[in-house]
View 1 (tube, protein in one colour):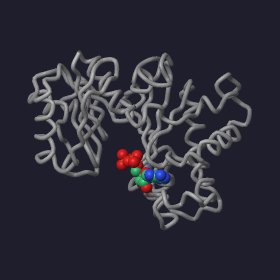
View 2 (cartoon, rainbow, N blue to C red; view 1 turned 45 degrees about the horizontal axis):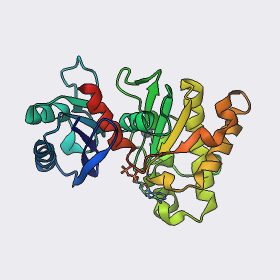
View 3 (cartoon, rainbow, N blue to C red; view 1 turned 90 degrees about the vertical axis):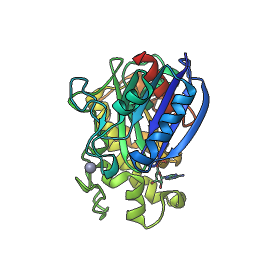
View 4 (cartoon, rainbow, N blue to C red; view 1 turned 135 degrees about the vertical axis):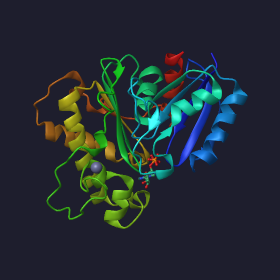
Length: 288
Ligand code: ADP
Ligand code: ZN
């Protein structure tokens, strides 16, 4: 099978050609400007490659309701040029092939479950902590959409008493994303997150907020594995802190094999940054 994969992000569009086994044969990256500038390049790439189907993991919010008039659209994004843009329909009309469509984070969890460390698991949460925070959720083997799709990066967390920072989320100020995204770290401490690597107190606080959110996901969704990706999670020092604080917050209430072995339960993304694009290949395969 010759499958197309499109990881549509706010800064770049990663386009790839691969197969149903997760092999990637060719990959390009196109800067995300306006649909008028960017989409013709994306479509030309897939046309030239003569793919049988394309899977799209898209920044959002997006409309995933197949019965909706705006299925496959990017809806109320703050990237205004892309607001109400018909992503799936535009590709389908230009390429004349089936288009699988889901959120960027759902494609990442799908990549990990199909080709990565979560293979065979049926309930998995993938959290990306980068410019924003988002979560893809696989539940009983299906990607969770529900009424819209999860927006678990915006869950509310308790602020630590000694944290005066007001939060950066345009909607909620001090939600999880508002307190713990890369831009929140930069705005709180006055330096890029990567430049704060040696500041223990930065990562102590960061891990406190991440652990709160994960505790909520564990209690609500009962995942078998939680995978953390995104730029901020390059700080590998966060992992032991997050595991420890999550255990403290759970406080012995949940007793399972998984929780006993935290180092295999809260883990780093496993596919060298390709979990999203490989998930898109699987979205394409499923659509075919
Ligand atoms: P995006 O979320 O835009 O798709 P990323 O997942 O790469 O992209 O996230 C970018 C964010 O991650 C930025 O806010 C940046 O400051 C932060 N970041 C990137 N590298 C690191 C690092 N090594 N340590 C901590 N934060 C980082
Ligand atoms: Zn928010």
